[in-house]
Amino acid sequence: MKQRITLLMLVLAMVLPLQASMSFCALKWGFYAHRKINRLAVFTLPPDLIPFYKQHIEFITEHAVDPDKRRYVSEDEAPRHYIDIDHYAAKGEDPFKNMPRKWKDAVARFTEDTLEAYGIIPWHLDRLTFQLTKAFKNGDLNRILRYSSDLGHYIGDAHVPLHTTENYNGQLTDQEGIHGFWESRLPEIAADEYDFFVGKATYIKDPLDEAWATIEQSHRAVDSVLRMEAELTKEFPGDKKYVYENRGQVLVKTHSEEFSRAYHKRLDGMVERRMRKAILSTGSFWYTAWVNAGQPDLSKISDQEISEELKKQIKEENRLFGKGKIKGRKHGH
Image (tube, rainbow, N blue to C red):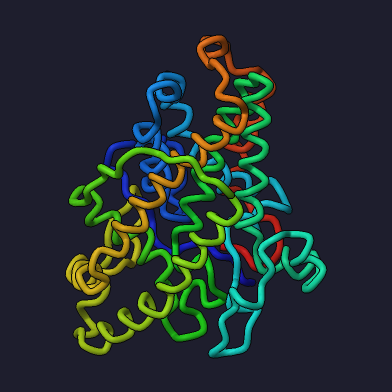
């Protein structure tokens, strides 16, 4: 079954520790990176918007991983995290020339079932931006926080090259496990060396176009991600590529730090660049939704309490997280 779950465990000893009760399950970018992206995106915001997000920064940070938890609850969740864009063109062709940008045009060409099967992340980013805009207009604290947290998660996913290809885990090129290696192991060993000063959020004229631009940038890096790992594997002694490490009470096989750093160096800053761009992009999408809503004064709702309904929903997601199989289609990251 084609479940796109990365194989590596998540790092604990960095900025935001995981809850002790949480199972060590590696997901997109890793929990660490998703939380880091959302947290740092707050500091890209302009003076009129940053006080609201700073007041709720712990919620925005902690709930950056909620979409991954919902994959154990919702049948519809998995396709929102990726798009197998290379499915839509023969080898050697440019799939972006074959894929209409607007949802209705894409459905007309490929059918909704096909799009759902191979991922819908660019359209979901556009839809979620619209929902966040509406939440700002309505002064709906719960939805503002929920949609902001979710939006940062999917933007993070869109910046990962292996979220844009059918060969999402190297399973087609005898490189099984490269997904978790790239997005979890590399940040684990190097993120504290990254420069996360990314500048200020800017207004996005067309969120759908921006989403597609991000997907295209990510996809253009797929060949390098795969080729460089394959080249390094041939050069490296077989007994030095992997090691066993304790993660909590579990002994797991993972890429050695020596191999990981060699691969990280060969990528020449790719992981850092994608993570930096995800941070800035998240802040810019939040800012754009707020501007499109008419730049409402959020101080009027900042001190409201999160509803019991939202608390109950989150509690249920946490309860089911890691229990049983991920729901949804076989094409899941």
